Length: 248
Picture 1 (cartoon, rainbow, N blue to C red):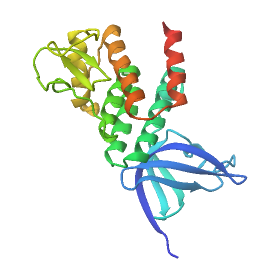
Picture 2: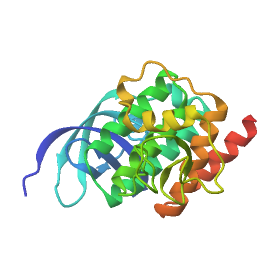
Picture 3: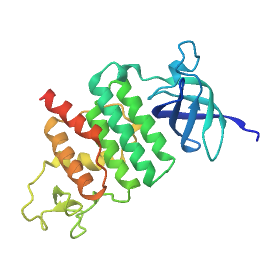
Picture 4: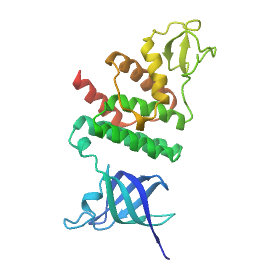
């Protein structure tokens, strides 16, 4: 069987030791969604693949591509190794959660746009933009891929786009003044920003400023929404919450 050599753009999502000296890498790619790649002998100290066979390597992967099975790694041209993320516990925690979340979403919807979302989010965190805000933006966008996008263009009850006063995860999104019952009212900035989060192009972000109060309201809504509608529960999310509590 002849395997063809391909160059693919990708980000390593996870690594698993294989045999005495190799690893199996799960790589999210632009061309082939998520693929398994064996990096032979990469755990040997002198292996040229050692430094490029780890989670969070973003690059051009030269592989012997096998469509239904493990491909084989030849070499990697690194685009970004995310060194700033790797030297910061908080950023590592956010990156780990983001990767776990993308991995789970891709099991339900393997849209190629997931690669661009992951790449853009990690690059912005690497550049020093607020990881908490970026994670919330990504979480909101990913709900679309899971088929449970909240109503953030009009009231989830009556459909009106006037006098939106709060968010309700149980009802599915925006609630207007005529339909509010016993829900607490969120700030007007929260109403505007959560919609902006959904529509913003992460790659084009040049400024990212959100007050702690507004971000907390958005995060509370998203956390409850994920719990109600996605069935995704990640240990990395719980760890991230612990990290955030330590910052308070």
